[in-house]
Length: 97
Image (cartoon, rainbow, N blue to C red):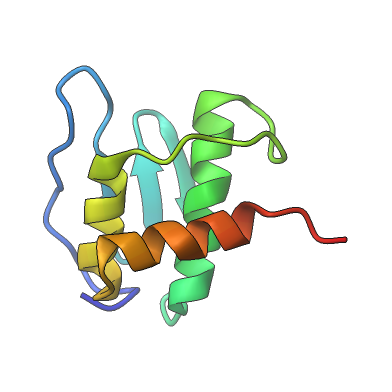
């Protein structure tokens, strides 16, 4: 699936909120961030990091752990391998000097 296309709900671990990517947002639990209809993979990954930081820490700069279930959802949404998604997310989270 390319960014901006509708996706079926992705199932995660029962005690955690599922990561859901649809045509307008990336969301988990009560938290949601918007995505543009023609966003790139990079934008989608940046929005995911923002969402997870807000949902878990309330801060847009705190480091976050990357969950395997989320990597699988993002891999399906972008068409990339889960490990490639993980490496790109690590790069997105690195502070800019």
